[in-house]
Image (cartoon, rainbow, N blue to C red; front, top):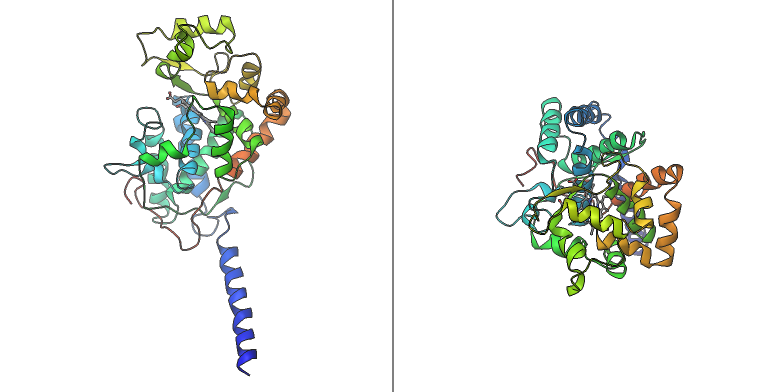
Length: 320
Ligand code: HEM
């Protein structure tokens, strides 16, 4: 008798845990019932920002990456405290788009108070950014992430790859997030939009590893272009990562990397693995690039998400 009661209990537990697992999934049209206009309100805010600044998508796509790689996609990147992720070296004075995300969050709060998480505002904005910069439509983008309470600056250094990283290190970081070599290559393609600070590449173009010369892996004519844009005395200068089409999410990054015109060592590192190098060639085909990029962005949006009853919905994104 006790035995069969135990068995019923075990089955019940299984059913309950199955239910909570189902509940914990992200899903498309997540706010259809609770805030039907959420996605369109966010989209409109991003579109307005884009209309006055075509470089906004770059900031938002990078924001999504930096959120998801540190503590999962939980909007920890938006929190303010005396030692928050915003202050970490990869983010300070370079991550951007905070004001646009604040505007999007304020607009959804006005329509549906306390319903849409900051983590989802980042994720939907990244989707909208891809659509605008890539001139594509991204269907079935998932929602349902919740916001985390913790943000620690040092975790940006341990979870985000450095622009000086070699292939082994890059792959190790991506694998630690459940992403693979293909994701590493295709997502690096985000460097086809946006800009960087010269300080990051000065050593690479003037004094690579103490040689007083440029990194021999860079196309010599590109070294000259970069030196013109980045005088040794101007680490604060800003340069486009794609000299040709800096606001378009296109395949130019892969064309550039393929001929030694990747801006960072981490970009060029993709040529040092036979498989990654083959992918660099494959992704020069626009029809292959776009769906693959969206696919890996979707995967990135699943990293370490808080769902169901985990975390909370922050009312203001910078306050836990
Ligand atoms: C693979 C390793 C990566 C490294 C080492 C890296 C590093 C960097 C660095 C150093 C910058 C310049 C920041 C500045 O000077 O302001 C940058 C910019 C950027 N990164 Fe990455 N990144 C990587 C991967 C990614 C991924 C996976 C994405 C998104 C899917 C991404 C999206 C961007 C974008 C869009 C920009 C331009 C930002 C802007 O214009 O404000 N990066 N990245």
